[in-house]
Amino acid sequence: MSWRADVLTLFPAMFPGTLGESLAGRALEVGIWSLKITDIRDFGLGRHRAVDDTPFGGGAGMVLRPDVVDAAIGAVADERPLIFLTPRGTPLTQAKARELAEGPGAVLVCGRFEGFDQRVIEARAGQEISIGDYVLSGGELPALVLLDAVIRLLPGVMGHAESSTEESFSEKLLEYPHFTRPAEWQGRAVPEVLTQGNHAAIAAWRQAQAITTTQNRRPDLYAQYIATGASAP
Image 1 (cartoon, rainbow, N blue to C red):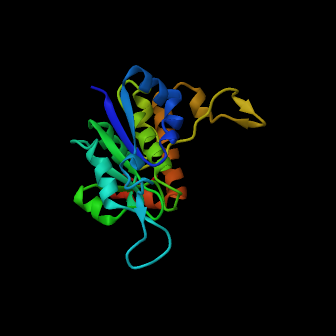
Image 2 (image 1 turned 30 degrees about the horizontal axis):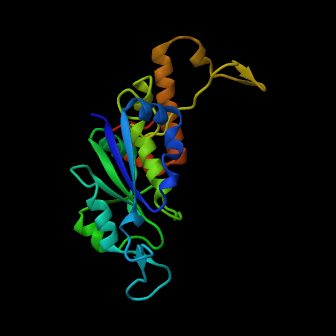
Image 3 (image 1 turned 180 degrees about the horizontal axis):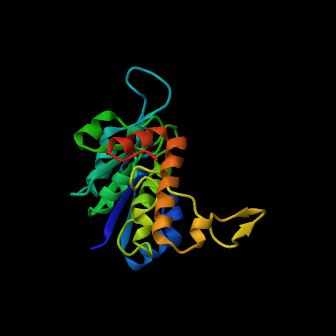
């Protein structure tokens, strides 16, 4: 059975977007995963298919109605995780992507305007996930990001299994730097250890580079790495 994604959005034309290209696109074509888009406005109220209303308590903007969003969710919900893409959600991590990849799929709900009425999130026991500490116009781009992170981890999507285990965040470390031909470019040579064929030395160099890069660029991740009992370089 393929990994199944349902996306609820007010802008269905934004999908599959980049997910129709490259690895994700090929995996979609051969059935490794499937994508179904539901237009939330199909469940809107009245002649104009209203999906939002003014917030209680005042304030700028509009809020997606709980009854409308709940009806849209009810049309597709099953045992899969239900995820609301919101700036106030739990940060998306590589570990979360891997957890989702190991399941049957996910139902993603894309917000717009000022977001969702909180009651529908609580009533549906949904997860809130954010892709970063910034605000976008809606949840469509975060949904594409989340799906891309998950789909590339599905069996048969990437050519080399090692690709997903040695990359950034897999061991709470940023990835080591990469080099290819030519061996010298603009006076810059490839590190000698990478050209000598000593696989143990190469592995040690890459690990040291990953640790140093993480320590310098992401001290928060480095602290988590050290907390696992790993040794400093």
